[in-house]
Length: 461
Length: 158
Image 1 (tube, each protein chain N blue to C red):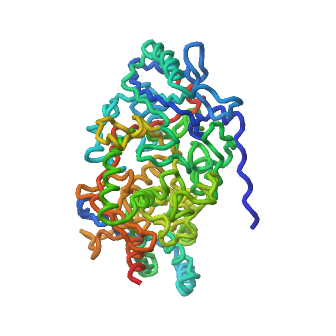
Image 2 (spheres, rainbow over the protein chains, first blue to last red; image 1 turned 60 degrees about the vertical axis):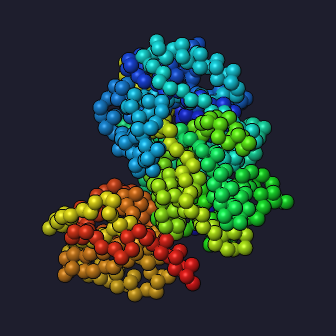
């Protein structure tokens, strides 16, 4: 049998219909998220129609069409199931959405580990009230642009039957690190048929990636998914569902002081270098160099940045370099054998930026909240986002790690979590009493409609 | 005959990681029974690395034990103990072993539409409808351990 035929490239019409953030990272240094409540369905539907095309007062939703020159900002829109109901989408269409989306993030909290301090009762922004209806994501090149576009949008919210419940701002940190000081966003699925969006910001480089391209239907509704013969269920009619997607919005608080303190404690107790522990927890050194390629040093002599995603785990079947339980090996096992044999079939697209100022180790308990505004995009919330959270983050059996949870983002048991790895001499090291370093502060399941679906909703009258 | 529903379901907090599958499938005809005997005898007599069922189950790595049993000449039972939620792993399971079920189900009465790859939900509903599970509480000597962890622990011991 010869090599598989290259997937058909998406047409310019398809790209102009798919929201841009599904297929590309904008790589802009600022983000603002708005949470809106629909009070007047007719007026709000009209606003969605205006967002589809843009006008003198309302910017257009950014599509996946490649740009000639980088824009100042990109606006995208998501709608929760409560929002679709509030917009009075026809009952037949409402009934056609997948059950996990209908239940919403609060309804599915236990499935993904949002319990205890992460439970919906503690969420902010009205995200647990059933009133979070429409979410707008504004990525921008500067604070001034965020302010200007926000002013334009806010001027039309009230007149469009929409009340602003909440907004949250995120900003790129120095050296492109996330909180906990790891370089982030290095590995993203490559979607078959999508354009090769060229890096267009100073810090981004084209990373070599040995993993297979992911079929379009893993992220865009109406096409074959990564499972042969399966199109993920999508809403009817076709005009509403096709070219859409789903996303889990997550506001995740990160306890930087607790994280650094834990590294200190464990390093001292176990006599293991604290930066090695940090690297083992993540699977990458904090600068992004992967343990799979450089197990002993975060400053390898000959490993250009373009190669930092160019690996699988063929040379590390025992997890001696990159621990099975580490954050990146769990969430993207690559060719590691895992339960179900689906190590490359539950991938998600990650978007977002940190919130809060950089952590200052000399003033660890400054009382300032830090975290991540994250959007996790997939064709099936159940088969991708929830599967990953339930089996790969909140459990460890799939990769032979018993009940150990993700050491960085996992919601640990009350008694404290456990993490196991081998040190540079191959000696087993076990960390215990690990607290939860991340707390969910809010979440929402969104439908990301196509541009034509926004027009379809507006045309409901 | 429609299989009886499980009379008792253990409380979620007490539920072990493993689950029983007792899939009882009704064979279409004597000719289909004969074809199934031939098919399964041939497959099950192959060495492990050539037996497509065992190769597939090794790859899936959520199944602790599996066996086929003819119940007379009218039914075939597939009896397994597996980890986690069948529904959660449905797509992965079908990706690996769907073709084997196609070969079996073509001989069954009331089979779901085939191939199962293209009819995944119908396959799940068929399995649910024909799974007798077990009577009362499912016993496990090691309720917290899944296949992958047991294999990893065994490797550590070597």
